[in-house]
Length: 287
Image (cartoon, rainbow, N blue to C red; front, top):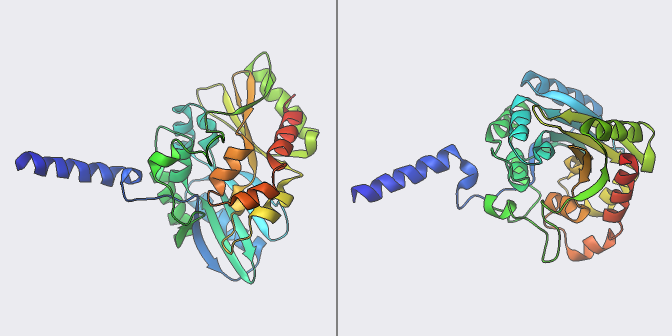
């Protein structure tokens, strides 16, 4: 009886310390922080100040189309976790969006715990999650009706035959990390493939960096797949990662799906060309 009691106490302690491990908990890709009325740019300035007040560094600022403004942030915890995780650069930032949805204005952000698990990171970023909620608000999580468990996310793919996190696309190979980074900087600066640099974050202690990239396809893709009342604007921008001398991107059929896990096959079919178009754009910028 005593051993059973000790087991239950240990299990409860584990769940309290690592809430993403709770068997009943499901995670969703976005958090709705605030909803109300107002102007996008005025609200964006409020959000910017709130993030800075919580110690976040704003590394990216992106207006993909009318009625949407995205801020990309990082901090010491995000960078440290990225340095301890394989291809951790994908999780070195979080994205915050101000979106117009009808007459409503929404502030949302990528769920750090969801992203930490889908990117198979060492730490679940629950501390970063709490910082974002403290800075911006915490109304509801959204982006998937049923949600996914941490275990499901760590082996996530859309369906049979679709790519996993560890099935990235190699965009280019260069002689060194510096050569690869320089090539990407040059390509994005020149707008190759219809791209534009939104941010760059270097992972401390590793030859690894993540770039946020705007493409000419962003508005078209979102016009098809982002039709729900709660906007998935924080899906953008796409990213590429330089690791060593190679440049990688997550496969479009993985990256889009992890951000829209409830996407129907019928809607996915409408953007069949999107993964290839994104690959061509980022490849052109990586040569």
